[in-house]
Image (cartoon, rainbow, N blue to C red; front, side):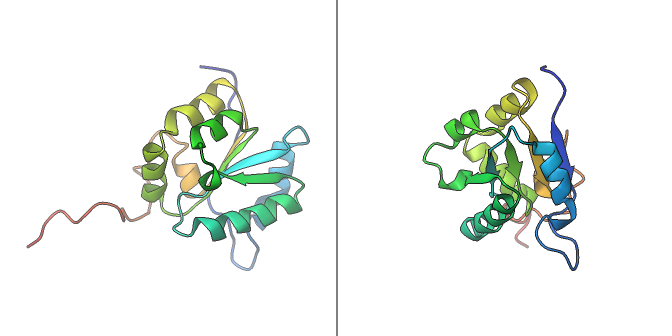
Length: 150
């Protein structure tokens, strides 16, 4: 299925005492290089997507990249199809995965990354969903009701 995967998977977006993606910003620049001009950001793992997109946009612009946030797109699937690179941010893995399925994005992201070879970056939950299973996540499933009433 396609050529080599171009993945940058980081465990978190902020280290104590540092700024957003500060601990890996040099890796981001070398990973994306000069050919990528725009990054498609997927902020679905956090509740406040607007604030999350602002934070990510500020960081990526400081690194020389434009950033489009998927939640602002009127056609998310088409946005993925046109993306040069994808960055899925951290937060709650269950919230993220549900939104990816609800918006029919799993297959399209998989195709773009595995078949078309575009760069994929994930942090925390964005790293979790890029693996074979989310069974090792330490997130709480905030989307399903409890199993019992009494």
